[in-house]
Length: 276
Image (cartoon, one colour):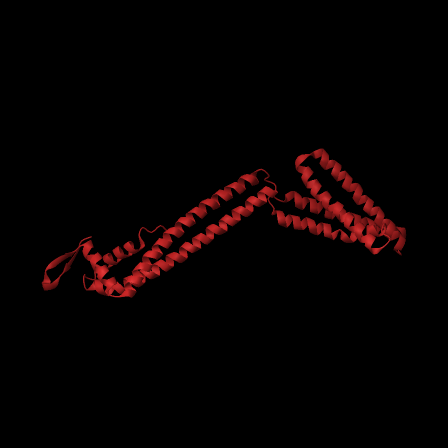
């Protein structure tokens, strides 16, 4: 880059790149702080380039993980609900059946411990039934029908036990016991269906794993992008600081019109090819 300027005695001189480089060396040598600032600006530029490479690699990994998740999910397009949330819904429905199962267990238990044991057993059967129905729905329609029939008989049996218990301890007679047992049985069946439908809509375990990996990769890519932005700000701050210090000396060597071009050349030298 050749830069014309008026030298001493009013004669035209040309400022060559070597002249600029020599001026920078002299400026840095004049004060250790200038040398340190120059070195830190170069190091910041290197850090930016490394961060950009890391960001690009993280974005590639995020794309690959997202494509892998979509490919796994495409096998079961009707199963898109988060697995953990749906499992929690199913667990809550089983828990809500606890009161109804407790009444049924009262007809069999001879003490509180035995009644609690029967209650846990009933709840375990209901929970296992929901999971088994969900599994059979994807593998065997015949097995699903057999399981559904078995659970229907089981729920009806719980209703009979509740009726026997309420008819024994209740004070509303047979009709009151029948109505109470019917309501609890309907609630048990309803919660069973809700829990099954929750599991039926849940994503498969491989899809859940792929979605977790995809989200983790996306978070890493976002963090890499933020790291690039932070290091770009640090680099620009150091470059601006160096240019602001050397500007006074440059004005002594060139005109005000030539100053922006020289400053831009210095910035490009300090930052290198901007990869951002």
